[in-house]
Length: 410
Image (cartoon, helix red, strand yellow):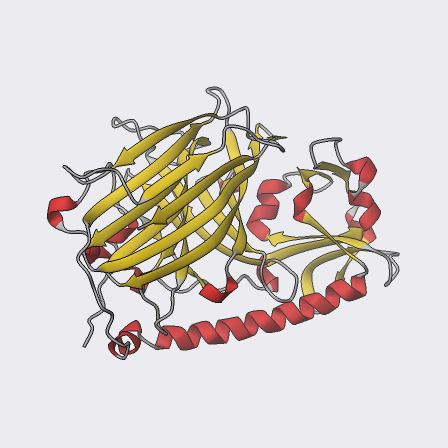
């Protein structure tokens, strides 16, 4: 019988790397609940004629929308969708622009609902209100089906599937942990409270079970400890698992928080499961630091672009910090692998991981040219060369985005 190995057991004591904090492999990730998609009651939807968010309302060359919204009395709520605001006097067949995001994100993006200034990507244009409603009905049906599947999967255990897997011929390989990072730093006097990016899970193949692979976007906040690292941090982590419930490759995406004031353990609320047949798989990353009534809250929103309904599907993680940071200080791409000498081969690639927008004091900027870097950080077991993992930070940008890439091959 093949026993299931937890991620925590995949690093030998002699080859573990001394770092500034505990990593995800120190946790039992099998017990992290599967993320449920946000439902209509947790989303804010604003529907206006498409012409409002095209051409004249876009700042030329920047794709930032500046919109003076009509007064509340000119909107109505749609039956069955209480959080929807639809502009009156629109034809059923008129093209519409739709803002459909989590409620906390709306508060962070739009402190003054009468005057919206946001990246244009948040609005999606549809041929008509009727077509959008059809897509939304189908999306809600798919969400309900996904929630049912999650409940079934959580009631099953990985162990009973692992026990029935055919034996895999193992060969002796390296053991230890290797980490490669590329770190960018925000301008000294900037106070970035919102960062928008996108991650593509590109490919994953492996044989064997004795490994873990993490490819990450790490966001360090402004309170810095004596060791020079951020006291508070947020991460989106793609965990390329060495096994899954049906024996196939499986990837799990985690929103992760760190608070060194309390402990050095990652704070993980849930995981988003990505199946291998959906690769390449794109999703948006939204890092938000709460302000005003939301001071103390950190949010990571994961926007899945791949649902068959054609609408984005939202997942989130959040953490409340009683001694919070106020803004983003660093942005890092990371690739990490741990081996126990039992893996025959592996190839995981997350490319690109890009930063698209940052907000400094209520103004939006493309990040390239403002962040400094990248600075390389590499860790490997004592007496062993640097290998298996690599990260790349592009030195040019065609569109103002910062493009980074994470690879793990062996």
